[in-house]
Length: 568
Image 1 (cartoon, rainbow, N blue to C red):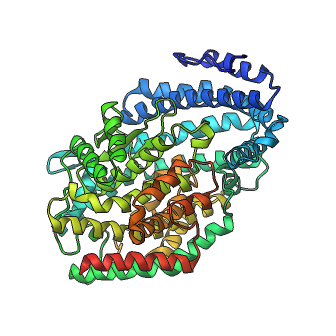
Image 2 (image 1 turned 135 degrees about the horizontal axis):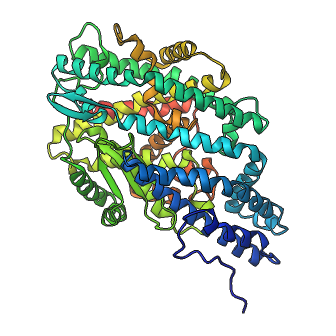
Image 3 (image 1 turned 90 degrees about the vertical axis):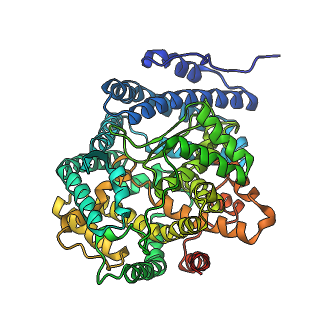
């Protein structure tokens, strides 16, 4: 019996392109004479993709955990500059071999392979050799955003704080302190506004060049195809914006007015938006990263023992870095590790309730990664963001039932759930704002900085409440977009959160209305990976991939009713 074709990958280290070049050459030269041969070849290709993606993942993880370590940064940039440019043309060669194989047509009868091959065909269409150095520049420049933000600190009460740590004080019941902290944060951000403006100018220039080299009139249209958006159009993005404006913004105005009245203020200022409306002290769900991990394991265990085991295993493997500290890149992420099988969670916890939300969000991603780790091919695990974020944003809502692991006081638990649901209402307008702004940026690529600020302000007014007085801080208002890392690092990856938020509400609603099913629909949907279309995966979870005003209204009426129960 002939042995299955495979590549000698185990134990191999990637020091340079020369270490992996023979593997690509072997794949290209290997003959395929049957459907079985083709499947073996696809598995070998998948193994190589997994091996390379994990190597890059660890370089990125180590760099973001310590942006002040030049050796770690150089290690990441070395891959981007000296290895990735060689991989790109070989990916194209192997994609073409795959697409042209006479056995591909038969495999397309399987929906999983059909989706995979459609992505490959799209990649072939978009590939241009001249874009390789452009992509290197883009990756190199995009990571500068993290380094710039990681260096931002302020001094408060004699202590040096990261901006994430300082932001916790915006929940203080002392209004004068909130105003002071807001000023410290905005003034520190102001020191780098010009630098970040120039960085975005450079990124827009190269992103536009990338798109035009590939035959597109603008980067927006290029990215819509590069992100494999097969299940919706650019016009659907505009429909989402309209639905948010018509349905969600009125809910948000109502919330904002309730806040103003509860705080007994004639007008709200930017530093009044995070404090508890009843002037209660900030929620304090955990002490530090260790405590956050342990309480998450306990809470997840109440939902499903498997969920707890995922986080426990990651902790034992050292694949959690949760505390905020100087020199650490901003934000949070769950980075899948294709070979290890268990991902890495990175975040900047400062003992705030928002950090609890981030942890369960990333925990949802982690559970998704583990549920898909045994799928046959890496391509089946590489979910589009609309699906990946369904996993994480659904977990934010589903896990509210077990937040008593973080809050032993019943009133704090109720308040935490209320904050979560209010956050859902506030998040959708922000997502629409960021997405609409990116559409504007790249369909007006020759804009000036003044025009950019004016556009942000105009779009913000469309999706804002108009109920916050920014007097004296107009410049900070016009630069609100600079805190959104997606604009710099992963352009156009943001509306997915909006679609997934709607899907998450639908998934949570289905669970409440069908308690006998418990979490099985959620787990079934996540286990599919990307072997079905986005609408099919949402349906499996008990939701709909639908952003019509009528459906959005149905979902937010449900959120409002659940919120009212907590306020009773």
